[in-house]
Image (cartoon, rainbow, N blue to C red; front, side):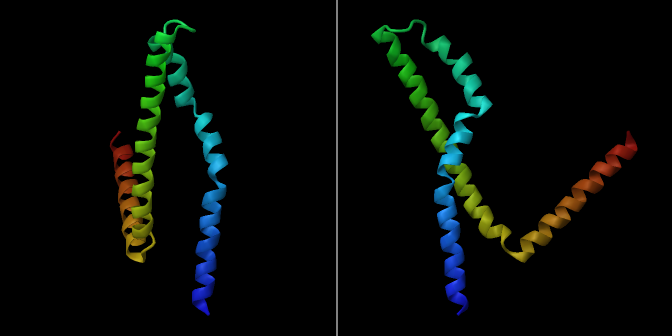
Length: 114
């Protein structure tokens, strides 16, 4: 029954995707780009600590950053899903192999000219 094995393979892949949530959150929270953003830009927005009127711009800045981050990661996930379908075909592997060979040849010719 080849269909049963394929279904179990996809089930394992789905479970692995669900298990990677904590690792993804750890990776995102330890991202140096995010840490530098929050340490350099947000203090410009929130001048004082404790004042209620100063908390609103800080909350808006954090909220807008999170929304932009969700949109960007959603676009990445959508593109990755489409690329996965395309890359699983043998024709696309051949195209990428030839494209890679052309790029390396171009780099080699550039190095010879220098």
